[in-house]
Length: 248
Image 1 (tube, rainbow, N blue to C red):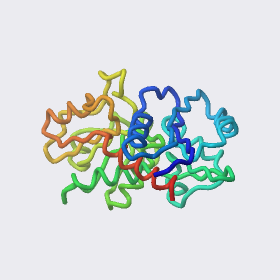
Image 2 (image 1 turned 90 degrees about the horizontal axis):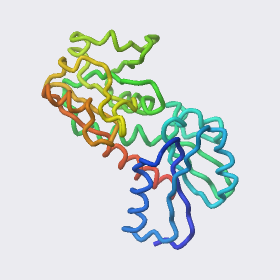
Image 3 (image 1 turned 180 degrees about the horizontal axis):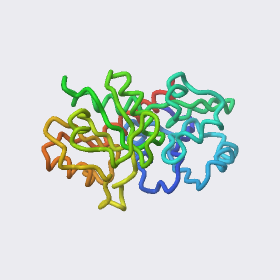
Image 4 (image 1 turned 90 degrees about the vertical axis):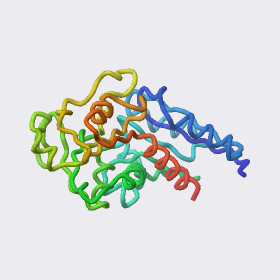
């Protein structure tokens, strides 16, 4: 299909575990994208980012993961309209002239993976965490007409703290979304501190984590009859959307 040398990659910190490199390497092989490579750019501080761009002029696109989805924005030349509204970037397109444009495909992947699970009573959601990933999730919920509130360690505007979650909150919020890294490999025994006994068969427990496939958060929710979903489909949908952006 394509014999031009094109390099892509993932920007993040401590990302050896990453899904993206394996996914795209397999995609390039299966779909015969000759000359395309995908690599990890693992940096300890975002200040190292300009050097990556400078030293790698053949890079055409990057995915961005924790903890750089928000702090990468000042290093970009332009944002898509939706990325600007969301305030977080997980996809960067690099033009032939070296201009960097940021996009958010997290919201798209989340929305596309959540939609098939929704029933008429799923009207409100709790978003656990307030980082870059949670912003994409919130934007998707807005588009779906689902009200939400954030949960963090400290309560403030449109945010409650974990101690405020009780059976009454669970009665009113039927979708619980874990946007924190709590429970991801290798710390697979960890889980957000919420009252799992309040889950019912009317609830959806959605975890953005995909490794392990079933986190303690999902296991505990499933034990109460909740419908559960991990972040793998979201990742695949957002990755394909990123590929579309890089090549349009």
